Structure formats: structure tokens, C-alpha cells
Image (cartoon, rainbow, N blue to C red; front, top):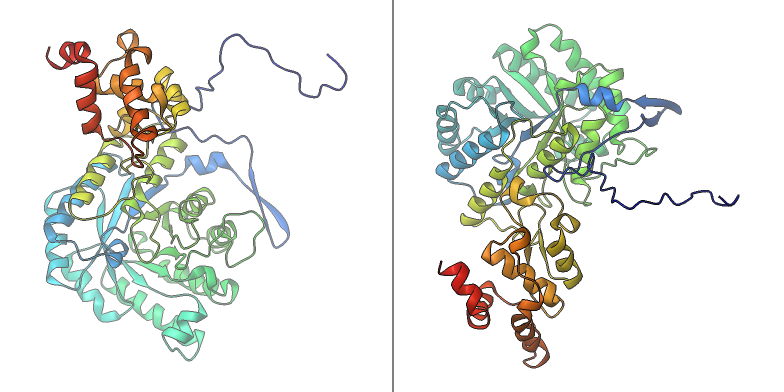
Length: 463
């Protein structure tokens, strides 16, 4: 080896496909090879990935609350069906642990009753109310054990929106409502709205510290939970960023300095700056057990953390399905679209073309080994086989891939691209001679395969 070769070639005659990470049956596994470090008040603090993975972290759902604030209301039947599918997705271990419902209208209360009549252990049904003492009557009448309540935390809300005269008046008002929850035998989940614009040391920490003292006076099952609401999507996952935007610092101060157990911390994000998923996973990583999400990220303004993405991240961290029925994600997407819920075609995991390629070189790779250009076994995990959409960029490889998928051929039975040349030539003529600007539809291809490959059509379609 020459002296200057810092990284000598490691020659190989067999591929190293890194299958201990890229297990094709699962989303790629997330592995850690050292501690995570953040600086708090200038001092390095190490966070252990092993400690994180030992915790019982989970997903909570707000499809029926925040998810409804960005669309026309669901019907009762629609919500009951979605809830039933969420339970199937969650599996017996309750990975989707809770969901929340409004309680103000007859439809809200009818939905809650019908969902509970299904008898599912998960997700547990909880409520959502204003921070008003009288609203606990609704929670108690519904027989719920837990409810969320709005306890806005930034001065934008305390002074500009709610018109409190001081922070003390605001805190006292919130604590009166928490007392009302305790008296009603209901666990309060305090939603610290707009926490990433709040005075953390001047208001948030004193308020949460008071909540913890109050919780010491009641049975453990009533102890207050804290939901950190990144209402405007200002939160940041980057090491070294300052409060109030630093998610690691927020979680550390509440968890380690104030003593809120991880099991009673929850993150609720928004996607205004395209950071909603990574921010939520950062909250998980640094000590927050509950990741609040909505189906397909649909929520107020730019939306909330996508629940299906949190599920995939959960599997990637655990390295196991943990009882989750991932194929239900596809079933949920199909149902949501059937009731008028739009999903972009390139939306991860569920968009019509999320695993569809139009590039010829990609199609060639898929034809040889679908692992080359498919993120995981989407057929097994999501009941969605990889597809190819034919354009002038697809080439003969793409045509051969489409033909083989259409006939359902595997292994040695697959037809070579040479035998598909007539169909491939027809595709190219559409663009070179006819000036076509759109992709070729499946229906058109079926007709051309029947016309130009009659022997194969008779063999596989008329058998």
C-alpha cells in the first residue's frame, strides 16, 4: 500500500448489500453508534440512544381534532370507520395509543359513543376542550378518563390573544382549570400552545413546575400530562440552536430539570417550514414518549406530523413490526380518497405514484432487482408493488417491467426487453412521431400488448 493511501480499496467479488440495515422486508433500520450531545447552558449533555430505545414511546392521533380543522367535518360513519382502521393499524401493542375527539356537538358525542362501542383497547378515546372549568362537565358526562385543554404559553397568546393583564393572572387561570379536572376525576393534558415562541424560563418552566407540584397531590392516574405544541412550526432539531426553538433543550429542561416523566410528555408539531416529521422524531429521541400525528399529515394550515410516517419510523427504530398491520395504511388512504380527501400522487407511502418510476435507467434496475430502486418491499409492507409509468424517457426496460408486472411473471419466467421491442417501438413513436406530451395509460398498454404480443396474451390471459 502506498503511504498516501488513507483509504485503500477493499476489493470484493460479492456484493455487500448492508442487509443488516436494509432489510427489504422492513423500512430501513435506524441504528446509533454513539451518544447524542447537546449543550445546555454551555455544558455538554449526553443523551443515550440505548435509553431512548428502552422507553415505551408511541404515537397518538389527532385526526378527529386538529385534522378536522383543515377540512369539512367528517360524518359520524366516516369517523367510526377511520377509528376502526386506526385500531387495526395500531395492532395489539397499542402503537397508536390514543386519539382525541371534540365534545361540543351531538355528532361529536355520537361519534365518541359509537367508537367506544367497537370495544377496541387502542387507540384510547380522549377529549379536547377549552381551558374553561365548565367544559369538564362534558368530559365527565362522556365518561372519559383524559382530556386535552388549551393552555397557551407564548406572550403572543397570553397578552395579544387572551388579553390577560399579566403572566401570573394567566397561570392562575390555567391552574384553576387543572384543579377542576382533578376534582372531576379527569386527567388533564395541558396543551402548551405556541411553545416555540414562548419565554421558556420566564413562563413555561414555572408553569409546568407548578403543574408537577399540583400533580403530587392527586392519584398518579390523574397526574397532568404536558403536550408541547409547535403551533407555527418554528421548532428546530439542529444541535446548538437556542431556546425557545431548540427541541432537544425544551425536552431536556422539562424532563430532567422539572421532572416531567417521558411518559407524560407529548410533541405536537406543524409543517409550516417542512420540518414536521423530523422535529417530531427529535422529540421522541430526546425524551418525549408521545408523538402526536394525523393521518397523512392533514391539519391546520400546513398540517401536522403524518401518522403513517411516524409508524414507519417506529418500525425502523424497533427493527420489528411490533404487531403493526402496515397494509392498513393503504386501506386508509384508499378510504380517505373515496370520501373526497386528496392525496398528492407523489406523497410518500400512499400516493398513486410514490413507487412508480418513469426513468428508463431506473426501470432497468427494477427489472433486474427491485431493491435497486424500491425503498423496501412495498408489495409486502403496503400491498403496493412497484410500478413503472411509460413515457419517452422509460425505454425498453420500462416496457419490459410493465409487461412482466401485468402478466405477473417472476424469476426465469419473465420476458426479456428484446421480446417487448414492438411495444417499446410503439411507445417511442407516440412521442417522436405523434408529439405526445402525456404518459401512456395502463389501458392503452393493455390494448397494445394484446395486439403486438398475441402469443403471450393468449398464454397468460386466456389460460
